[in-house]
Every structure is written in C-alpha cells, then in structure tokens.
Image (cartoon, rainbow, N blue to C red; front, side, top):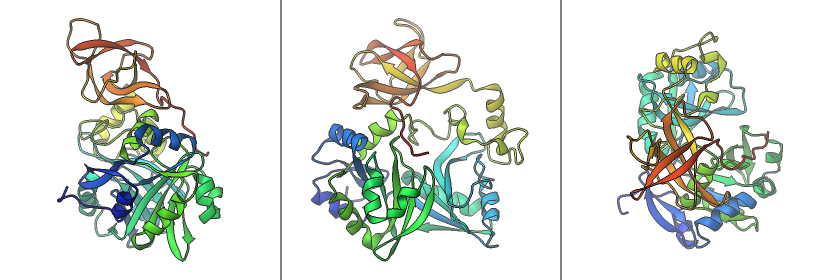
Length: 375
C-alpha cells in the first residue's frame, strides 16, 4: 500500500472507518462499517456518496476558440458524434484502436468553448498521451490535477444536493453545468455508474473534504465503497473497463451500439474516420460473432469472473467466459455478464463451471435492475 496514490479524501475515509484496498494504483475504500450489502441497498433507497477522485479529468481547449474544432478533432479517436453534442450536455464514448478494440471508455461534455472528459483511473496516463499525440497542435489537452471527483447516487441524490445547489433540480440526465457553492466552482453532471439518478461533482481539492462532510451530515447520505459500486453497476448492466471491455473487445461485441450515433455510421454525415472503423462499421451491419450477454444463474451460487460457460451440462469445449459476476442485493440473486456466440438467444440455458460443477444459467436481458435516470 505504501506505493499507492491517495485521493484528497483519504483521511476522511479513515475517520469514517473505511477498509482500504489497492485499486487502479490508488488506495481506495472498498467498504465502510455499514458493509457492502447495506451500502448497496442504501444507494438504491436513499443516497450514496462515492469518492471517484482517482478518475482522470481532462480539458480539451481548441486553439481556434471554437468547440466545434475540438469536437471534430476528438471524433478522429472515438466512434461517437461529438460535433452534434449540444453545449451543456455530455455523452458516453470510447477510444478505439486500429483493430476496433476499446482502449478506454469515457464521458465527454460540451462546456460551450471547450470539452471536458472523465476517463478511467488505470488508463488516464495512456489516454492523455494518446490525445496529445493525435489531436495535434490545434487542441490543448490539459489534465486536471487540483480537483476531486465525487458521485452522489440514489433516489434522494437530488434532494440532498439541491440543499447546497438548488439549480441541480432543473438538470436532466446527461446535463452538465458549472455551479457555485460557498464561493467555489462545482462542475456537475447528472450522471453516474449505478443505474440510479444522481450526480458526479468535480470539486476544488482544497474544499473537497468540507463538501463531502456537508453531504454526509444529511440523513439521506451515506459513504459508499468500491464493493457496492461494483454490485450496483453490475445490476445496471454497465461495463467495467479491463473486465467487460478491453483492447480485444469491439463496441459492437460489447453491446454498445447505442453509443455510436447515426452520423458516424455507414451513410452518416461523418461516417468512419475513427480507429478500427472498418471492423466496427462491418459489425454494425453484419453483426459480431460474439456478444456480451446477461446471465441469471439458478440457485444462489454466483458465477464469478473467469467462469467458463458451456452449451451443455456435460462434455464439449467452453463457448464463453464470464467477465463480471456476483450477487445482486437488489434482485436477491446471482447475476453475471459473459461473452458468448451471438446466435444464443435470450431464455436459452447455458452451463457455468463453478468449482468443478456445471451449474445452469439463463441468458437474460440487461439491466438486471431497472434504471431510474431523470429523463
């Protein structure tokens, strides 16, 4: 742990009794005294506060002063429509490689005269280098290192945050804006990684602890660790980079077709022009050979990451592999995601090798738990 980085809220986590673990090069809270299951359910019924300051925050400022120039430059690295993103809005994107695999997934926001990106902690150094190498002299790529990032998630998130910043009640899902709290700028998006309504809030590092403590003093808000964050996102059917998506996985295989807008597809106004376009556009038209699918194992035994999937209870070679799996506290049952042949339909029974025994699982739609975003 001595070689790990720490977020600015490290001391607060210790005071709150967090169990700290290594994660993406950081020492992070995996759970608090409430425990993972109760933290998960508290987020689903009230509001959970997550420290996600290990994530990367990046500003892309165009030399021309035109955000359209920055958007067009970024479109050379991602298969999504950045140019069509309105000011005050954000969307999900992914960096792709020449083989059509995913280098990282991210959020990109149009803040009027520049773009704001949130990237994964384990990939941020490579992502920043990638952008600086390919966006050219026309864009200044600046990593933000003096701000923390918090996620406030759950049905009571708006109630809690609106006590401090009343304007957030007017925001819809994927809206972004800069608001004021006690004389400092908060960079707020109505988004998250739990399937619940909520917000991600970038706070100046020197005020992050005070801001977090102000929220935690509210009855609805509890601190939530990485353990519950993982079970919440899995119930919501959301990918975790390095597990469910990686450099060998295409966006189409991962079921992220919805993130590739018409403008970037075959026949669109700006079709292709991103790394791996040949493969990705072909798979959008013809379909991939394998797909990410949801699984609902029978019984109570979870099928964890790495579990091999078979077409039958006995014999045969594996047809797939679980990339994320565990117990869903909200659905009160195990759940998993796996890559399997694309022609396997929902409702089919497959078999997972759990400690040497093949146990049945049903191919199921995702999300496992209905999402509750404010549209």
